[in-house]
Length: 303
Ligand code: NAP
Image 1 (cartoon, helix red, strand yellow):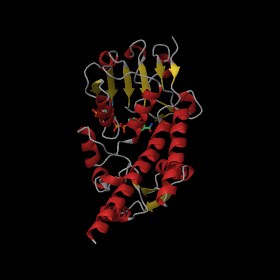
Image 2 (spheres, rainbow, N blue to C red):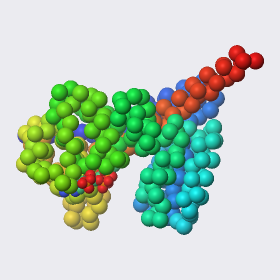
Image 3 (cartoon, rainbow, N blue to C red):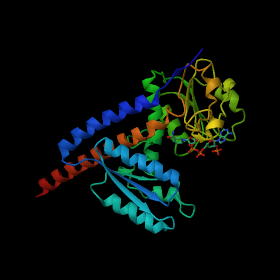
């Protein structure tokens, strides 16, 4: 068997085009384009590349980017003040603190300071709590992107055995919650899972987000399973066997023989993250605009 390739690049391009046309309508209706602020602390080159990509993507869909850069030796209070000022700025619909922050700063504590209605990464305690409770809120971008890939591939999640390898707050936990909300039977694995191979081999849908090149081997995969590879591991192009030097957590060459559908790396999950960051920014802008309208109406009635 040779698995169908799930083309994340094409699906992300479709999502971005949809967002662009919705942004056009939103801007025409409200007179203001959604704004996305990125906050980068320090000069890590990889983080600077990610932030640059987000800024460009923002412009492409008609949003206004706000690029805030703080020196590597910024104090907690400096970053907190920046997040607070962006929270108070009505031109800013979404705020993203680029992680990781320098080691002397507490990333989760800073993330928690982002105004929940502008938390387009969906990582604040408020949005994580809303997701856990099954209530509407801003959802983390990469797990939302994975759900879209599964939907686009026509995967039936109701009653399916879904196994997520990795339990990070950024990906594994929210992914498990989203799958549960789709009525999948969900198992979450991590570094202490006793027999990873055996647990993975039960999965109808296997999602790997570990950060270990080719950890998931052929016999981890049930024949006909759908495999989503979130891992992004940088090797030399020679080691990786591709131009980009990127490989996932799944041994792609072996998995493609057993799975029914699979995401490649690169070109699978990666492009979905920015697409859903844009989607979340539009959602946040809509919510804030509704609040402003409600507030204006209440003020009018009280006059
Ligand atoms: P993370 O915070 O480092 O979490 C890794 C998880 O993998 C942890 O839960 C860890 O278990 C588990 N793990 C480590 N070794 C394991 C093993 N041998 N067997 C089973 N589980 C193991 O990483 P993350 O932020 O979730 O990211 C994971 C990967 O996804 C990385 O390669 C990252 O680059 C990629 N990623 C890609 C995107 C994208 O846009 N495509 C977005 C997010 C992440 P413990 O909890 O027990 O330590």
